[in-house]
Image (tube, rainbow, N blue to C red; front, side, top):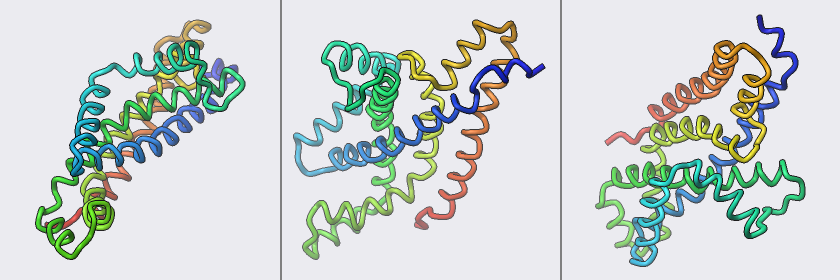
Length: 221
């Protein structure tokens, strides 16, 4: 029944999916944290930028963003992100698109965590002479991250599933392989089940582990 799978690099496709997810998750966490800092910062211009970015990007379909990185940045403006071959360029553009999109959700997850930190703690930190950056880095964000583990886990799971959109610009991940397999084999249900099982293997343990971590590190109020 599964003999036809030997003709396809299934593990390689899912490895590409994992790479997309990991690199995009790291980039989204960094950019999302910066956006969250802007949204709660004292500078009106930065708050306005953070708010406008999040509200705009969250309401744009991910497919549009991914296609813009390819058609707009690469083919129109010639942005290649330091890569020479087409496959690497498309992979990096997909990572960029996923970061731009997912960071808006990371920002909101972190901002919800920031809102759980008692205002008195930030005021006390400012009273002893700490700057906004020090208050955020030493007092607020450590607690916000601990409170946001479960929401961030949900964002990560969504990101893993969203990597399938990278197939739109030719990245050789699981969804593109699935399309190729369906075109070549008369096994629609079986192929769909195999790919779905692969994503379950990636997302289910991630959700369970991060859910357990979230309970362990949650701030007791």
